[in-house]
Image (cartoon, rainbow, N blue to C red; front, side, top):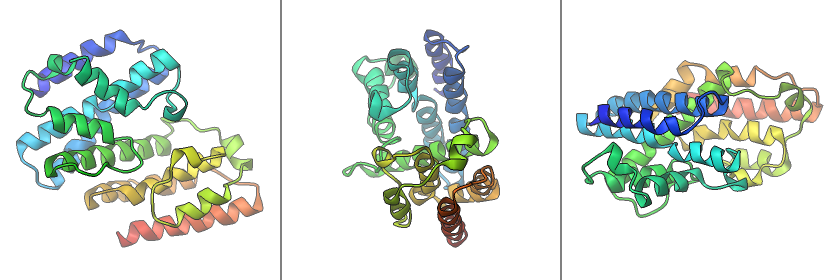
Length: 249
């Protein structure tokens, strides 16, 4: 089953321009998230069936991103379209899912996981299996984003960040130990800081372990030298709070 999903994903991606670095990044991201999802699924002792399902969900979780960029030339959901909902629509309303998987027994699990992978919070009312796979893909997706930031795969404008400020609302929200709503972000540094809040929505200890052992958070924090005195104080408090949370959890 997984082999066919991979084969069909490679056919699907031919509809998009892999010479575009943004498309290539999302293509590579899909495979990396698949590997991370497998690691998490094995660490929490899932069955072989659920491990394979977690990998399938991971490979398909961002199918909406490719069409989003093609149509809107943007990866910013609130300025274009919700890519989780778009991906679900492409797969299930357009029946694209049947080219990947012939059996419909996993449809609701896959659909709910893809719809919820990019939401601020997981919707209520999911059954046990749907919630399980929604949590795995959310963790794996966040881990890869942090990895990409730490390694430079996701570029950031350091010159802008060095002189930017953290808005009061984002700064105060961070210490609530919750993810930050993207629509609240006002500055480039707000966006940068909000990615550290990913750790407050990590579901499994093995996922936090990956983040901690690879030092993704420390690496991202150390990548910028700030010039505004108030920003320096705020960033340092956020750093201390973040590292303390990682160590405790």
